[in-house]
Image (tube, rainbow, N blue to C red; front, side, top):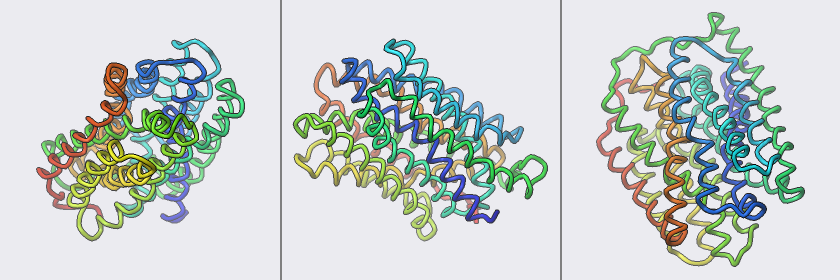
Amino acid sequence: MRRNSSITVLSAGHACVDVYQGAVASLVPFFVAERAYSYAAVSGLVLAASLLSSVVQPVFGVLTDRWAMPWLLPVSTLLAGLGIALSGASGSYPVTLVCVAVSGIGVAAYHPEAARVARLAARGSHGAMGWFALGGNVGFAVAPLLVAAVVAAGGLRWTPLLVLPALTGAALCLPALRALRRRHPAGARTAATAGRDDTASFVRLSLAVVCRSVVHTGLSTFLALYTTERMNGSTAAGTAALFVLYAGGAVGSVLGGALAGRWGRVTVARWSYLIAAGSVAGLVLVPGPALYLFAALTSAGLYVPFSLQVTLGQDYLPSRTGTASGITLGPTVSVGGLASPVIGAVADATSLRTALAALVLMPVLSWLLFRTLREPATPPK
């Protein structure tokens, strides 16, 4: 299987997994409507999907530096799907928490190994990694449509149907893994990249990723509800806004790889975060349908740096690429979830608009951190 074919298959599998990251936020309005959960309660669901990921994902990153574990791709995909599929089957809030936590573990186990395998298949290409990241964004974008189609038709009791993307994703992993095994019979281990680790730069990069994750997860959790409030109670308007948020990320991921090839990853990320800061302000403050435009710009601004941050982390820690992948991808799905209950509590105490307005600070902090970074001396070819 050629490089482009392998990346295409891995990207499609990535989409199937990240459906379940998007599904948690997409289910929030239905939990509010059907079970009368408060903002704090639905924030707890996002936290449940994210808390274990904050520990598990870096651990799996460390493990992939020592041993190749390609079997994790299909297994973790199935785990992510089963958790979400069972989340609506019980009316018990604790059971629902456990189910979304199990899904979060599956997502966390998938990403470090998937990033390692994708880097191997991409052979260091920024563009190829951008296409791999695109798969995740497509999964996010499809999630609200898929959840709306299933749950709006039959209620939360129909969530078991949401296991279908996981079954598809697990099957898609197999041909790409077989091709890599033929090229790398010794377990497809990634050869150590020459160069010294730059731990200080990696820490600053990781902090920038944390700030990004707070604003992205906050918007993913509450944008549908906020739009519903703004658009006179239309659930469809909220679903459309969430779709725009995720779809803009798909454009941003591909654009990031192309722009980085011309101006460098650090420079492109800096400008992207400035754009994201202004777009979040517009999303919260500008009235009317312009909300959708600002949602798209916010998403593009947050996702242009996404795959660039993964490869930057791998280049700052060339001797520990699995660890780098686990940490730079881990906060993306976990630390933002840890902040969601705080956002929900502020929204309950004041208003959702006030709580979301504070998110403007997060991309500004990411921009400031990127101003301290430089392009690694030996970026991948």
